[in-house]
Image (cartoon, rainbow, N blue to C red; front, side):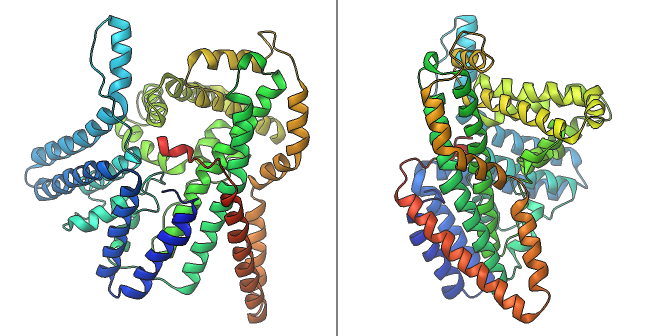
Length: 474
């Protein structure tokens, strides 16, 4: 079940809303509703892997209890409990996501015959594994209280708004909200509107951009022109931003409806003026995790920071998928960020801002080429085509047709990826604060806009045959 489906919007979400706000009275009952519905949500697509999530959560649950019990008097036992718990969770992630990749490459390199496991990737395992790690590590660090209720910890791990595609929510961010949170008409309304904005990003922008990208990038590359290659990867650049930020928007909106405040995951990354800034704005929860739970413990900027960055970016690439293109993608960003730290950042600061934006977007678009093609030969051919090296035509009739038919879409999608909507929201917030009358007018306009968005998104989903969520596979 995906958020951008009519079953989720009109059946699952409606039923959950009724149970949560009308049937459940106490916070304990509300938590029970969310837990049951979250497990049902996960079971809808992956029933057999619920056991894996339950076991992974139980490992961290009992491990954290041991950590809390022994960290003062027997710190060596607490460290051992922490190490074992984290290792088991990462072991599950390795077995189900990475074992076959490493075994296959080991067989190819050393002519061995290690049997592959052939597991399908459990949805959301990368996200909930990292979340359970934040819990036990922060208990060890003394930043979080140990959770003595397994159902409550399982609720944190399995909450359907952010379970399968993030954002990665640290336990300390929602620790208090698990036992004490409030809902109001204003908060529910704001959450619903945020959800509808995310749904619009997905159903209108991401899906259309994805169809354009697929048309250019999935066919015979020998027939692809230079212009077609750039148009296809530009469409994918828009698709992956709108796809992933859409899910984050919907997750944050749904969390707000039920009283949870999830961290922002995107901050208009395509307005960045450097790659370093881009990664402060893109998938913020992932970069935060790697900084706080890997980079800083390794030594951060204090010692061996170049090596530390190499480890972090290699693992960042590998986190996105068990394939060489993702590792190359991570190392690509590692190289750029190291260069920016050494000298390139200072050079950029002396350049006009427009050149900084062009530099950043050029490198980001190239990066998405690594991300898109998991076949190394197709990846190589695509880059050759982009830069006119292998003799493909500069343009063809298909390029012109697609450009003319979608020029308005590209223009609107590019503008919408900037803080224009943020500026408009600030304007209406100031306007509504001027008087009670203006407040009512702005509220009415917001409600009407929400109804309109629900209508056009429903229409888009009814007529759409292309509706994937890209980050489900990570």
